[in-house]
Picture 1 (tube, rainbow, N blue to C red):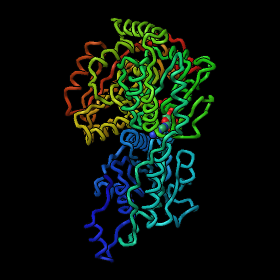
Picture 2: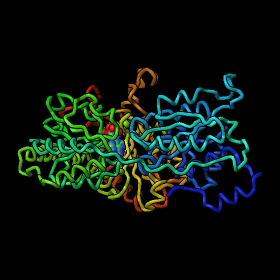
Picture 3: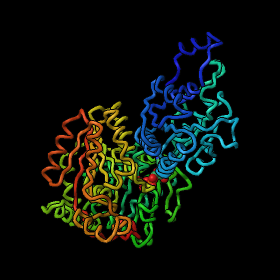
Picture 4: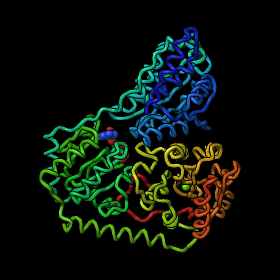
Length: 585
Ligand code: ADP
Ligand code: MG
């Protein structure tokens, strides 16, 4: 598993005591020894040599067009594989661009290593080229931020960074590499590589807390399990599914918890989300925080006396916003097994004929019918539901779905199904727009190694696509099997059609006459893909969408971008509660 140096390699090196190597090689070897397999970055002074050395040692290097996208990509590797990816950036502005990705990874609790070149130590505080207090700057965005004191100290700092990124609550770590380290030649014998860090230790909940949790669940009248991305990250799918099926409990996935148990499982109550949250009397949280995504666990979205049972690896999380009745501190996978054992002693199941199940099923039927109705609308331009309905029909079961945008992501999430864990990546806890292409690139690179026939479908709003649109060149350069869908409503939240746009321009130039939400009407985003040799489609009807998607999925030799024109003022079906309480859009 771990990329240890073979005995032969060690022997060869220690034979020749004058043999030297560069600081760059030390960094690359230290990363490889910690089982780092993927590096994303933008090269330049002083890190180019690090990327070259990494590649020579067999670490896959993906050159991106902006550090932010590179950092999103590296963080997605951490979530998908459980081992951190590396984001390699140059000093000053390069590092600052990566901060968005670090913040996003840390908020999502995803492991990530950022390696930043920095200015020479001898020029510190002199106004050196791209000088910036990088270690300090990263502290706010990471669990660990440090600069090795010498080239000899690099392996232990990298081991600590990798270990910190995956132990406890996972997160981002920063290692600062002064420019003068990179080309410094050191005697090979002076470097001691740390062994690959051990896998994260598994912690279990207190037995008394497990008993109490089982008893609270057994006494529930309207129970609900919420499955978060922490459960996905913990690989707890087998245990959680057993628990759901054995105890016949309703469950609700969070956006990235989708797929831990397949969305089409009969116990999934996602289509009655608001009702399930509002009327549950006992809720078990498996790796999901009571933040904005879950409306803080507070009324009016929940009963004032709802009993929360929290399962989390982070003690400080327990009790945030709501006082839980039971806290299960530990690894979700291990704690789920403890719960299963407890229920195994005195088997119990929640009655499938209960009123709670009946009312949830009724609500699901009503909501599903409303979505179907919208999807079946034949009018043009298409609406979101029609688009996603046709996309869902053709999606391969095992594809990875990446999604971002406002309505594109929210409505897409309800229609597009996930059947496998860790197969959905989206704007996440931080609500970050611009993550999509980086995530898709990471997913495709990982898939190439694991399951070469797997497809990555990246569903973007037109606004979200714009943040990192030039990464299409990266996609084409590595020929990654990604199908990009740009759901284009000419704007941010909404836009206008070409005629209205021209009408507005009669009142003055666009800076004064066009609403801030508008983007250029009918922008031909597909030409960004054809510019680099991929396939591009501009579609306006369901038939064109079906045909272009079919072709894109069949032709695995080329990436594709389908630019899907929809109603510029299209909205969603009315909701009892808005996703964002204060959103006026
Ligand atoms: P979601 O966005 O799906 O609601 P969150 O990111 O809010 O999920 O919550 C994920 C939670 O999972 C975090 O509080 C994190 O500490 C926790 N977590 C991550 N890995 C594990 C694990 N192996 N065992 C238990 N909890 C974990
Ligand atoms: Mg839009």
